[in-house]
Image 1 (tube, rainbow, N blue to C red):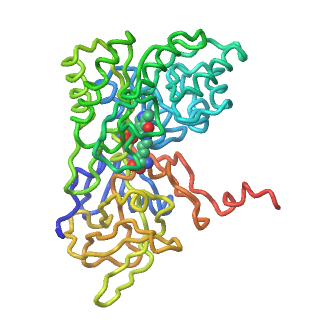
Image 2: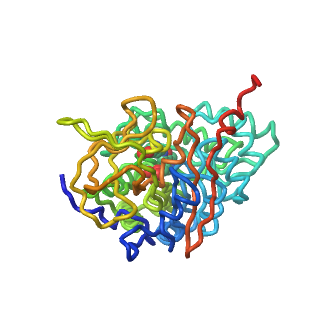
Length: 427
Ligand code: LLP
């Protein structure tokens, strides 16, 4: 185990160490943010988010969509649209937030492997820009709904599974043949779906969509996906190819990931090498939001078990970050008051939930003097953290603040205890 301080490259772009050694983001000491907004707290560097959106638009062009599942709220929706991105929503709920935020419907793409009549109806009546069709049942459903609603035939992409096994956790791998998503290329289902969609007056088939998985570190997998799909794509004579999302980000010291620009370059080079004249677009989520945020926790108890280990308990846990439990994902941790301090002490950082699996970092390195009351920081929590948060053990979900130029604005308030009762009908 290395006792080195946290690597600053894992922190949001505007992160700085102030003269007393403490962490500052967006020009504000995080200790102040914790005092003002409480803990646990998600702190997003707004400039970082904007810079990644701008990078995506520069790399892929204006049709590039932000995958809202990574982190979604009204403020985020407005930010991504201001930066020129479109938006990918995968449920009626994400669509609802997009529309409530005023995202122009033509900039919304609706995804999902099991879109309900209600979800499709909302998308069709709002006039979303694209629907990514995932099954034969969905083709039937659109053919039934479009004439019934009298809506314009939607522009449609067909989701195709190319048979690529990207190296990532099996729960977030989606390009392999054995998948609940899309139409498989190798079995001929993709070809049959193209025939049906192209012949249907209820939809305007404009392209193909391929998403091989998430947290994929190697741009080569995207290159393979493009070259695997190339012949099929050329044979169907369509204009648009979406490569989905999935480029990985570094969470811990030994991880390195390509930038959004490097990812786009690899995809474009593969398209050129395969002679594809398509308009190529993409749907990054994690690479926009993950490294933009940190979570602040307060240390509540430190339990030293002689000869075994030390447990450091914080005031959140698997309810605000289920990724370690779900995928075995690694995180770094450090103290907000001494960012550059060596971290020689190996401890287990755990949450406040009533199960032993509630672990945030199984073998964390912290400074020797970690104490009750310390403010602990876990970086790279901006994607699939707040969006996957739950109320397990009736723990209220944390607030989210955006910081920029020395100003903090709360964009999602902390849940209150009364919020925990708001759905109960048995008053
Ligand atoms: N497009 C489609 C069709 C997707 O299914 C996804 C992610 C994305 C784009 C965005 O992928 P990204 O750029 O964020 O990798 N909860 C998991 C990740 C699940 C990803 C699901 N789909 C996690 O915490 O790692």
